[in-house]
Length: 106
Image (cartoon, rainbow, N blue to C red):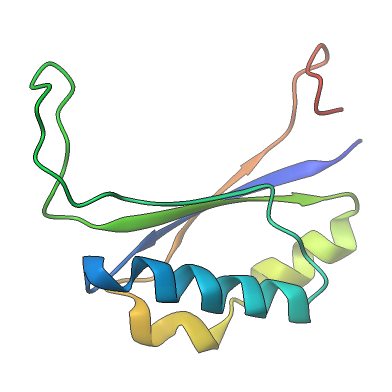
């Protein structure tokens, strides 16, 4: 089957808390033995390229995680980190991805 990748989309209550959220997220992930492949927060700046709209009213954070077995993946999905809820405006969205046959991520 190969590795599975999860993209977690977190909607933050306060855009100023992106750095604190990322730090807490990394702590929670380290406690569960997961190392994020990527972690990004939205940047609160003026949109100077109107052809690509920016949703400034919805600050968020995106993290990409890799799981090499279904057990780790199922554990993460069943027990989302409660320690992050104070930062969140709503429950996170979860996208489960699998690399294509020719992907370098395999």
